[in-house]
Image 1 (cartoon, one colour):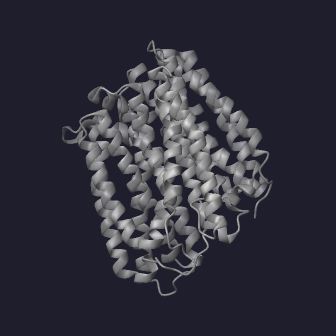
Image 2 (cartoon, rainbow, N blue to C red; image 1 turned 120 degrees about the horizontal axis):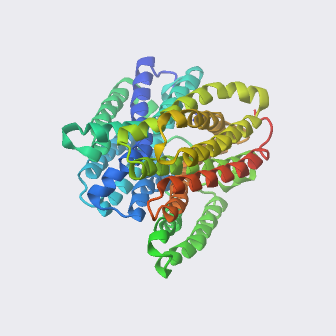
Image 3 (tube, helix red, strand yellow; image 1 turned 45 degrees about the horizontal axis):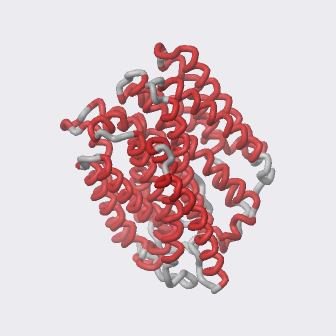
Length: 482
């Protein structure tokens, strides 16, 4: 993901310290993105061991992303107040503790709480990484640094299902599915060590960077509470509605989410009217490119996360594939996504934002081809039949998702860039949480008689329809953004 940042560079920062800072941030983002998807292929084994129902499975998947998204705006502000390095290192330690908690959980409910805590810790670290890299690298080297950062984030998310399958089947030390969480502990330790090294080598003011002129002096606690409450009230009914029969206890939170989110919007307007810095600068949505891009981001990442989840459940619970075999299903997708991401700058230079139209069109056609292949082969389906349509879907994703953030931010003023850059990953995470909840509900509604391939084809055609809507939305983006 490419993010433009306007910030003053410390001319005294030495290159060795800059690369150590980048190493710490790369390990951090690898863990954070890996945790979003690694749980998918481990879910069937996890659900059997913890006796988790379908709504619990959806919450285990979605609560991490939801907690991550709800915490990001507040986490960035805390970093401004307490110091980037202090918050970053503390968040890494908290993430290691949360991963250990996930790995020793004895019930689905306990794991849900542990995953939520992990999402909060991940957001606290993630909100500092962009500022740390910006401060550590001179302006001419930032493009390379952020390019590496975005590549690692994308690859970690896509490699999650494969790595999860390998860990479950390898069963290291007899840990089974618990290994997908416990692997974060040594990674977090390495990140903390690099973070300590960067503090010693890079000038203290380069990394800490806490009380710069113009930075906010207070937290918008009311806004943070309202945003978290509103999103929680929205996601809970979507994850629980199917299993609980849309009882009043489920519908009521859904109804309450609307006024709660409306109160959040009003509080942000009031904060800005009083001359304070809100969590979200609402004028961002007056920019057509950003507003349309935000809708596209939420829809796409919702589909992407739901695709990983439903494919994993179908392959393991419906077709009886092993976890590692299931992970290999998405390997052509990852290869295609890398190829698409690397070639996307060429398409954007030729067609501007219409490159996104091409990408999402390829993605939609590939989803239809995958659904048709599953319908044709049924239980005899193997990786050979799926390889090419899955590769095409990944390529379409790369062409669409890689240039989207930069095109969204191209028309944003320098003053609002910081808020916009924090809002982009927030929209991604909210979209992921809502997508897996909504499309997961569609999937389980069809899979009640264990006809998982049929349920998956329903979800795939639903995604293809949403992609067709997104094709139209891409045409509303400004043709070229500079």
